[in-house]
Amino acid sequence: MEKTNIGIIGCGIISKIYAKNLSQRFAGVRLAALADLDTDKARARAEEFPGTRVLEVDALLADPEIGIIVNLTVPAAHFSVAKRALEAGKSVYNEKPLTLSREEGHALLALAAENGLRVGSAPDTFMGAGIQTCRKLIADGVIGEPVGAQAFMLSRGVEEWHANPEFYYKPGGGPVFDMGPYYITALVALLGPVHRAFGVARKSFETRLIRSEPHRGKIIDVEIPTHVLSTLEFAKGVPATFAASFDVWGSQVPRIEIFGSEASLSVPDPNTFGGPVLLRRARTKVWEEVPLVPGFAENSRGLGVAEMADAIRAGRGHCADGALAYHVLDVMHAIHDAAAAERWAELESRCAVPGAVPEAL
Ligand SMILES: NC(=O)c1ccc[n+]([C@@H]2O[C@H](COP(=O)([O-])OP(=O)(O)OC[C@H]3O[C@@H](n4cnc5c(N)ncnc54)[C@H](O)[C@@H]3O)[C@@H](O)[C@H]2O)c1
Image 1 (cartoon, protein in one colour):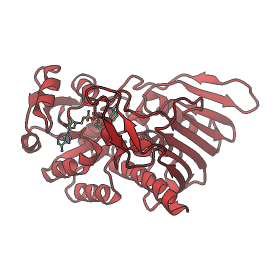
Image 2 (cartoon, protein in one colour):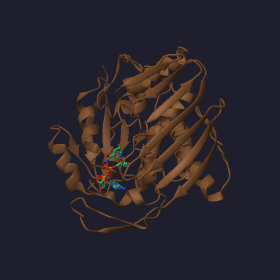
Image 3 (cartoon, protein in one colour):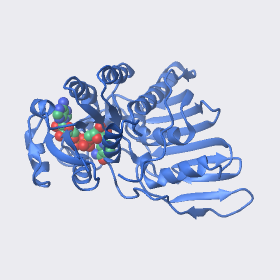
Image 4 (cartoon, helix red, strand yellow):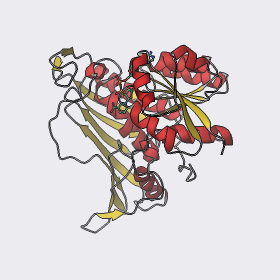
């Protein structure tokens, strides 16, 4: 099979699993080169994957061998790096969030459309076997008509373990922009686009103390809300609750549940690719575990990149596409806008519901 050469820009923590999967896991892609502002980081990552070249960012963008740029930089750099990739004539796949602002996201999609290029974006976890199983259960009518949903991402933040936690407390970070993409993308993949959002947002702590190395003891000024409650109303009329927090030490609420006229569906952690998928049918008292559909149940970050490469070759649309990521970005902003204005925010964007993931990746 023809392979698309991948160039990764941004060689921090998350690049490890992308580099591993893009070099070994998928038939249609090959990890060709790595770049980072800090070339030592690219060099260190390349040592784990023999045969991978280390380039300066500009050289990687200009390299005619590279077909797709995978942008794993920090959120504040997502737009500028992706824009440069598109200007260099390459399709680009961003880590989440797509960009910081709606204007930037819109500009990327427009630039790609003008030049016949693709924009893709994480998360691709909704393409995993877990959420694909939920997608099929809903499409097959097993839960009946969806009547409601709830999603909770409650945690205590990343300064306990992440080596570079500061950006999580700046614009583009926070629980909604950092973790919301997993939850909102899963909900949109299962229930379709969102029509309007309401939010209540709070910054519980003005500062955070880093407890991880190498910045242990440093104090971060918090610039964004860290405890956010929202109501999302989907275009098909389904209401959902979504709560996201970096201020909670522990909670026993579920990750995501979808309530249907015939059954309730417990959706697995949308930050993973696997199960368990649990179903409680009408008038029963037990949750049954549903076998997963064939597909990717292990940590398959990069699946969205491989599927985008396959879709480009086949001339069809791809699953983790820019319109979906833009809609999710729009929802995240709408939650914060609604919280600030203390009234509902209507969503201007819409996106298609992604189809089933091709099995032959
Ligand atoms: N760490 C995680 O568990 C995780 C999980 C999923 C997604 N993500 C996402 O992945 C992205 C990166 O996260 P991370 O944890 O790997 O961060 P990180 O800080 O460990 O790595 C980011 C890297 O990008 C480089 N970089 C920054 N700006 C650049 C630019 N303009 N050009 C070239 N290189 C640049 C930095 O030097 C750094 O090496 C973020 O968008 C984050 O939301 C992280």
